Image (tube, rainbow, N blue to C red):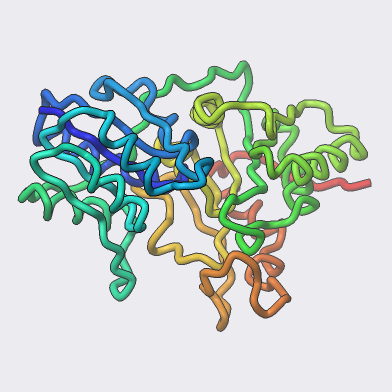
Length: 321
């Protein structure tokens, strides 16, 4: 069986789609898959045994995006089935151009609160007449092996500033934990400045056992580095879902987004830290009320308390200069 799948645009959504994709593989064990999507969202499938081709969506670089998508779809050959986990008009154009016996287009349903993993799995069950239960998030990339227990901190979130905690607070957490863990600061190209702010505070406090890899890794390297961690502290983000796939002990900070829909999926080693607010979750990229209290009110002690729950044996102290 030949299958073409357009994966979601964002890294986290793409990771959350993996249980649904594994359901398809379970139903059709001999399936050969062509993955289509952004360079960020497709990279996680580079070592998957059922994926024979990855095609990058570069349509946004074209003046005539719809025409680019249609022509690219026509070039991919014939498939037994094609589906997209996106609900955009552009995805409809891509699906229209594909030569496939059966086609299916994901439709959002925001009226019912449901985890995104279940939404994607419901979609696959419906279009393929299956009755399968989604299992764990699946990444086949080999994890980095660190020489010492290592903490990863991820201050960024591609969706927008409303999701982000503060560099000085991340730095304070790292300082409190540096005697227990080596530190790795993560971040994408747009988060280099945030990571640099954290690094500057660590230097001021004479912390030396850290490395700052923000903006220096590919998506594959990012996943591999996260996969070898002993602990991960992050906002609601793509890297959070990567850590979930590897079952990394994770402290996840939630503010403007719905944790019931995007919480770490089936990771018993994860703890969500959030503050109940009348205005949250607003689901906005930036705080519409200009106070950002859903994240501002999360304190360092809240995060350290969650860390202690994950590792009760550690002894923490914060000594800022």
